[in-house]
Image (cartoon, rainbow over all chains, first blue to last red; front, top):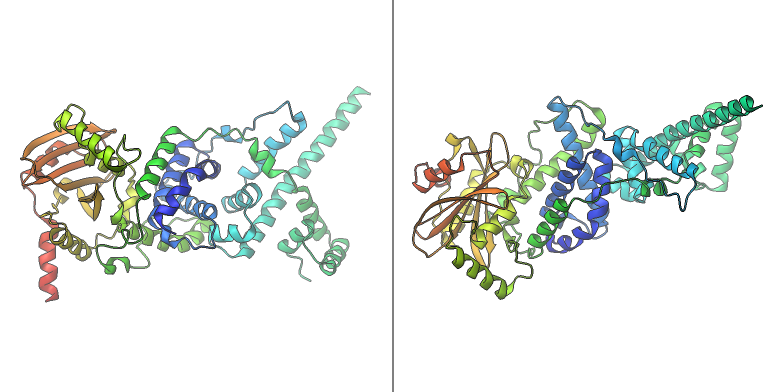
Length: 182
Length: 322
């Protein structure tokens, strides 16, 4: 692919790159910088994009590696990896179409994913949220497909544990309120 | 059968053959650990995509939309031939592994970066060769073509290149391009002087621009790259330096038949720019405000009060090679 071909694709990809950068960095300024730098890098080496690779997966991989480099630079500079902005963990309640339980659950799902360890979180975002296949995610992250699957399995077990606990809490609190009501 | 996590996940997701399913179900009955892990994986089947669609993300900032549009516009004219290395292939064959000053302690990060760092380094080097990028994205240059250049020439004439807010169109294009630079854009460039000398030779002979690359080390600026760009089909040379802190500084040069002009400092598109014309060459020194004393630096360069970096090295290289 030529830089000219890729340049035409970047504007339509912008919203998804922005959302992905926000979700991995948790900061608006970082995300903006990240997307911009990723676009420059991608255009500079557009010729490396193979015909079989989806431009979106490829862009995700560049955003991700740019972020990893940034985290690494920050850890060398003695700063914390990131100051998570909890605002991004909020979800918008949509009372017209959804139940309050669904809204609460959506918020819990987003929080659970965002609090996974870095490597697992990125895989969950790529596969679970962006809908990449295991193969595409492996290409995006430059790791074997088995690594993607085992990270995903560990991530899902962690989330499963959280949701089992939440379910248990709900059952218990329902039981308590029932007891109190009796 | 070893009950690994991948297999159990495939079981929960219904991706196993009947035989494999039986094996897993047998393991669930006999192993509390396997049963527990399967229960956790089952509890993890959740509407992730729906949840994230409800996430209250801020909209794409207008500044980012604009920058991507500028980038897309800038590269829309790049062709594979134009993007080929002008400086010779010896730069493309840069070292596979750059010295890595940022090696971090975190294991997962490091393992990923060991694979990422070399190709990123190569990407930066490759970036030095985007010489065919045609700078046509000056503000107002929406569609390009003759009408655009005529309008820009008119604008230029109206403002007499003055410091009253009117920069030449080529300077505006160069500023727009420079605004996209971060330290990372050039930080890993190896400042390959032999390759740079080759580019300088090409510029002097092929483009007919008798340029000199000033040595600005005394001002804390390290030479990083020299690129041949084009603006309205005319050669535009960009020489990039990296200060100790802050964003890269560029010295851009184009041929210009007009009479010499004195130094003029102005702000273009939130960047500081110092321009002057000497010996049929038009110069623009571009930096982000506050990082460098651009006026003083421009004065030194325009008065040839600095050594020539590449010229000397170029001669030294040639002497060494012969």
